[in-house]
Amino acid sequence: MHFGTKRRFLAAVAGTGLQRAAATAAAAVEAAGPDPLHRLHALAGAYVRFVRDNPHVHDLAYGPAVAKADHPRLQQAAADYWELLHDTVAACQPAGIDEADVLRRCAAAWGTVYGIARLAALHQIPASVPADRDALLHEALDMLHRGWQARD
Image 1 (cartoon, rainbow, N blue to C red):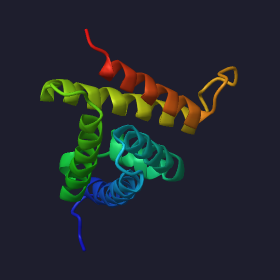
Image 2 (cartoon, one colour; image 1 turned 180 degrees about the vertical axis):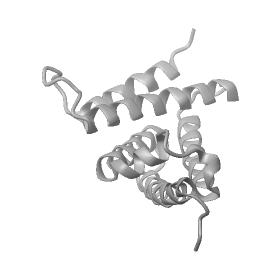
Image 3 (cartoon, rainbow, N blue to C red; image 1 turned 180 degrees about the horizontal axis):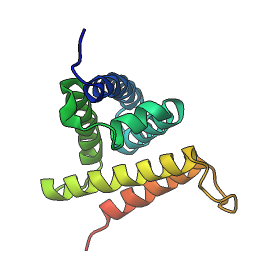
Image 4 (cartoon, rainbow, N blue to C red; image 1 turned 90 degrees about the vertical axis):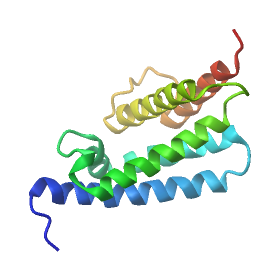
């Protein structure tokens, strides 16, 4: 198989890794049962494990070396992962939330999980913080969820 360029090859590698991560995350969400918040926690846990266990693949998929458009496998894997995130976050919302709000909340949830995962992977969470990565992750998700449920 010929990829044409190094960048396209790397995008294919990233796509394969991200496909596997998305499949693992989908299985974790399904195994979490019907409770939407449990499913969100399972999805976040799977993402953190992906970052921890495959840091180079994660950096390749989400870093500057390649773009989603460089290979269809990477495009599809990213779309599949986003759809899983979207569906999981949407299920956590109270009735009447419009799609624009769901999309913003997806981005906020992903940014939160991504940030905690990367900081932990790089050993940048100060030792003075009285919680480990998983405790921080779950506390942050619970805070987001409580905010989503609040009525103005």
